[in-house]
Image (cartoon, rainbow, N blue to C red; front, side, top):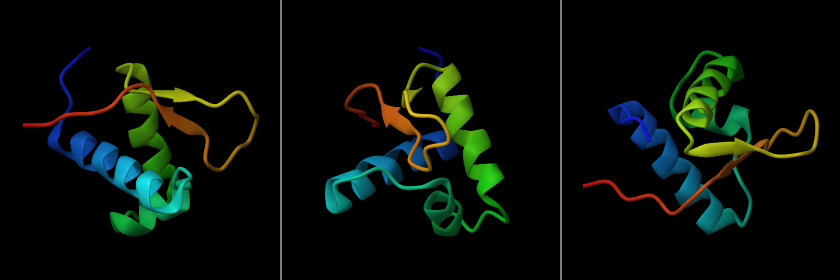
Length: 77
C-alpha cells in the first residue's frame, strides 16, 4: 500500500469513528461537512484516492451515498 497523506489518515480515522458510533459509513456530504469541504465532490475525490491506494473499496450498489467500505482495520502512529 502506498503511504497515506495526513489528510487521508484524518478521513480514514473519521470514517472508522463514524462507523463505530453510527453503525454505518458516513455519506460524502457528512464527510464534507466534517472537514469543511465546499462540496461533497471533494470528499468523493479523497475517498477515490483512498480507494486507489487500496484502503477503501466501493460498495456493489450503484449510486450508494455510503458507497465506500474500509478494507481493513487502520492504524496510524
